[in-house]
Length: 262
Ligand code: FPP
Image 1 (cartoon, rainbow, N blue to C red):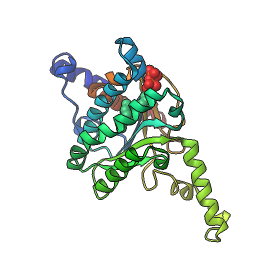
Image 2: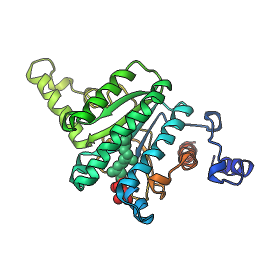
Image 3: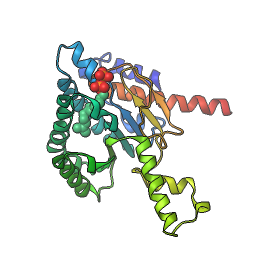
């Protein structure tokens, strides 16, 4: 698959980013059903350019727009992106404010296109802990796209994996205390049904950019069997070509696994 990507880039102009033609679904032998992305490296990208961190996040949002479009074009079922963790509140008030503003800006500029693309939005995380304006916009986006049947876009905001599991445990305990569920009847499906991602498949491929190799409390349960990729590219530079490379690498990993079995 990587060879095919290489040959293809020779045809499309030697891989010059501007001339890069995104791969089509038929060019992949196997695509993941659920991709999760930790968009890391905005701060380092900004520092390298002599810009403030807010600029890095802004450019990161532009990169995100292209990745969502391509995921939707490829017909991948679910894309989960880590936009703001429960730990991110410890950043400076200026950076937190810049990220919260980006949430508003993102939905103001993207919601029409997302709707037109039949994308369904779900927020993973505690919306109640977000400022009222952001909460309102997120609730509206979820309600407006609820009936859509295309790409399921999960945006993790004020999200933490341990928090999600703790919340699930609390809900299940309530059902047990109310006599609606016996402890013996609790299965892995019961837990999965109390997560923000209920009804969705597990993560097949997790990508974390910038070379950092940590899960950072993202989708702990859902990543149990995920393939992990850690490209060194900083998130604002992670374009459709980088994404195609990652998706191709995922395909070849699966083929090697099949080979060992055979
Ligand atoms: C990590 O980079 C990135 C974040 C904490 C935020 C990511 C958010 C966006 C790209 C935009 C927000 C999304 C929406 C939907 C509006 P970092 O700052 O930790 O990078 P560094 O490790 O280089 O400092």
